[in-house]
Image (cartoon, rainbow, N blue to C red; front, side, top):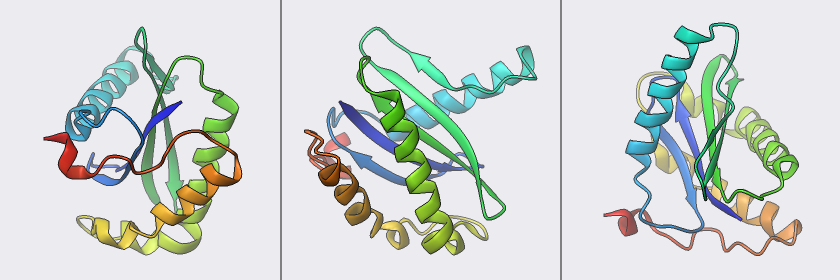
Length: 145
């Protein structure tokens, strides 16, 4: 089961989040943690890129992509036995959608997250078409407090 999909800018700002489960996850803490681990790893293993962070019952897939000249980090939090092929395809499809329809959102300083709101419908359709059991957007951003 996928728990959350987060998209961050190269500066670590949250650009987009879709929460499916575990509403208590603090996206700012996740971003800071992933950024710190990625920077630590690049110092120790300069030829490698951080791909996964594994906890006992929760895993994180982390992928960096260039979206029209802007480095974007995709972070998908999921349960341990989730189909990684689905996650990688999901990231690829979302990245393609960002390049095609939303690349201007990442230009300039700051992010206007409301400009990415239509990604909700796009992601909902992906999950519905795949016959996924998750219910996208069961958590609102207000649930995290």
